[in-house]
Amino acid sequence: MRDINIILQVTLITMLIILVGRVAIRLDYSHSYEISSYRQVYEGSQYTGGAGLIPDQTVFAYAGGAYIQGVNPLKVNPEMPPLGKYLLGLSILAFGNTNHLILLCAVFTLVMLYILGFMLLNNSVASLIVVLLFASEKLFLDQLIISPLLDIIQLPFIFLSFYFFLRAVGQKKDVYFVAAGLALGFVASIKVMITAILIGASWVLYSVIRKQYKNLVKLVLITAPASFSVLVISYIRILIDNNSFWYFLLVQKWVFLYQQSKIQFPFSGWRLLMFNQWQAWWGDYSILHAVDWNICWPIVTVVSFGYIIYKILRKENWSNIEGIIASWILTYSILISFGTISTRYLLPFLPFLYLFSMKFLLDFLNKFR
Image (cartoon, rainbow, N blue to C red; front, side, top):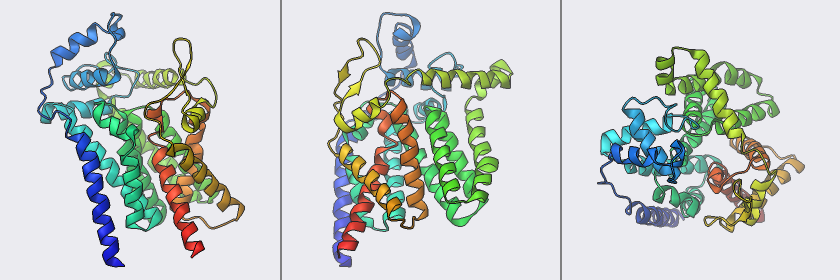
């Protein structure tokens, strides 16, 4: 039996390497970043009142190079936090382009998903199957092809924050609450901060339900300040240029309100997730179809919520990781219910649905036996 498991693990890992490798090899790792070319395109784009239309990845690439040369983050793409673009800038300094960072983050994401999967499932083969299923998603692979985007930079830190919080809950050590806060700060400072807020809310929800009030106090006194410190440091250039912490807070308010502009068309996110009916928030507000939608999405959604309801009704015991993932699924559902989203906003959500669906399958097989 052990030999069969080893063969299955090697087979799955080989499939995973081939799958991701076939896409990753298409990236141009010898490409030399020229900030003057990006600046010219940016200055003639819709972001400066020009006639040209440029995609997000062009803006992020230009911002990364500009930030690392000392440009104030409020001058280029201020509607997104700056840390992800600083990381892109470091990749440009180290390797000459952004593709190395994107590949590193993709691998980091899959490794962390496997670690969380093993913590939940206690089964290497099942964990690798979850990783392979997620890695085969066009939604994930497009993060390598349409590069650089901030989602793939943020995603591994989302997983890392959950990992450290699980350690904090299990071992009751303050160092893990600090680590969870720092990872959460990276999440807030790379893309939209609402993701980090929802993660923190899910941890609070879990602590309240499990009556772990000491953990709740540590979340407030240790994790939250650690997270906020990362956000402040990521805006250090603004603090230097404006010499005002109050101005930094006003910027955070503006960014938050900017992201709130997409809170419209209630439950449109569920239509996208379940039926591939993507509600446009521009033009004639028509219903579109997402090319990266997957038939597995409604399946794992129904199975995961069914599993949560089943455990609640049967009053079964929850492990720490089961309770934390369930709290995250329920909390992130708020964003799907009230926001107009694109498929990229499902990247922090889908892996946990895959994990819970696999957990349900394993529990069902064990009970059937």
